[in-house]
Image 1 (tube, rainbow, N blue to C red):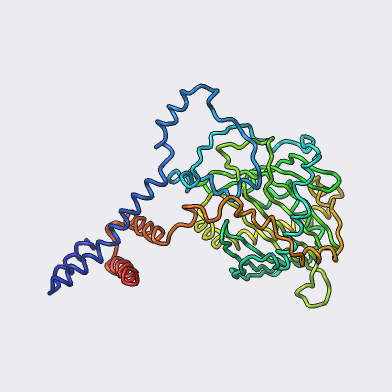
Image 2: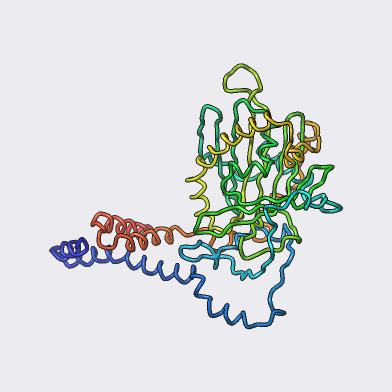
Length: 432
């Protein structure tokens, strides 16, 4: 009825030019919505669309099936290639162009630490001094990357939080945050973030965490994580190498994705090949202003290629960042109480206490060195430009919104909405 009344009002105009102009403004966004719907349907086809091809593939002999392969860390960047879009199952599949059929058994979350192996030879170097240098430059903002854009500044009685984002020329968005926890020591915060057993009590996205290998000399660990994603996405798995350096009471904690042939990739959960999440932990003065270093500062740097279009990922981060951060503080306080009430040290926390000690002068030399950052190119070593389809054009977003609106509220689109959208597109056309 609303649409009929709009058409009647248009046809009642005195000049044919007015009628034609308004009709074009009305029809244009609807046609755009149809075109966008066709493009989306073609690009993000449901999984059952490949059923026939999969049935044919299943008739092929077992010898022709693709085997599980080991992979090179640096050869996988950037990887945003595990999108298996299945309305409404996920925004996944045709973005990567890969048909992952590898299947293998995943390490169980019940695996004990005794099943982990000791890192030997070159594996000891999965996290090394180059990573420390990269983190130091990030902390001092001397890495040569783009300027940081402030996103958030929030606080509670026990903590304060600030966050920034930047978009490199290639690779996924990068995030920097500064959190200050009152009445916490750097050592307990260090152990807290390293303790995978306790993490499941406050991180509801963590499904399982298994230690694959470790070095009792440097404290380097290789762990396998499986993290829960929203219902419309597949879960994600991470093979993470991590190590801590100590300079006084400052701790430089590096965690990043590393290669691991002992855990072949599977179709589900999807492997995240590009992951970097590292932080500097140090004592700072409390906001009480008493001059005492009773607070703990955590400067975090994070980016990862989750297999989700970057614009959608950025929207999700903006919407969910503060809610996620707020959950960390209660977890930290519970961890403080648990450690205070028990003399037993969890294994991961014990490994967190095995640090490589460096002096402050050495760190300054790293920060000021002119050495080209090999790790800075991690997010761009595979491509000189952003992969196609990772940044959704604005027209696609707007057109998709129109298509969604038409689907949900077909007969109730008011004249103001229809003509407002039409005039916006008309203005865009005139500018072009």
